[in-house]
Amino acid sequence: MLRIAQVLKSNGTDGELLVSFFEISPEDIDLQEPVFIYFDGLPVPFYFESFKRRGTSRALVHLTGIRSLKDADELAGAALWADYFEESEEEDLSGWTVRSAQGETVGTVSGLEDIPGNSCIWVQRPDGAQVLLPFHEDLLVSLDQATRTLTLTIPEGLLDL
Image (tube, rainbow, N blue to C red; front, side):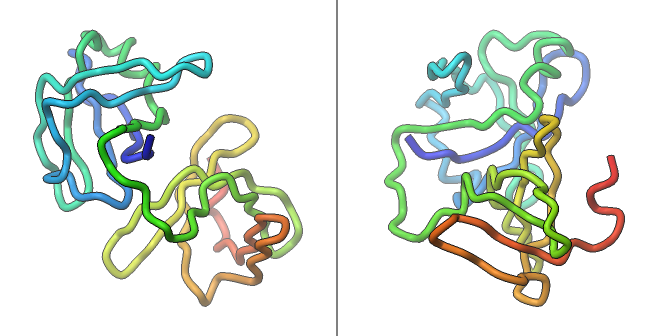
């Protein structure tokens, strides 16, 4: 399966979700096919009940069975997976360790947010929080494929929650 999106947050009180798509465009989504969210290591299928595009890489969606703010809040940060896309041969940074230039472990890369002119990476922190960091060659200190580690100069304040 291919990780296609991440739930950013709930929207409203009726279970609507704001979703950000990774390397695919929202128009490439087959609304008749399920997406999967992993619970306890197992993929659980969900179908789209509604889908409203918001910009080039986001959408407001309702998924089957998600009917309340509480349900939607529990999915914040969850990845959406699909089994009808072919994975690319390009190097995927998901799972790589991210360190600051000072040597502090920041977390693990969980996805890419390709904002035009400003590529960013989603990083899962050890405390479970997600943080979006700029991923630009000027900020890249080193990239070690052997240890799957990225070392970045992280602008002050980006890690403050």
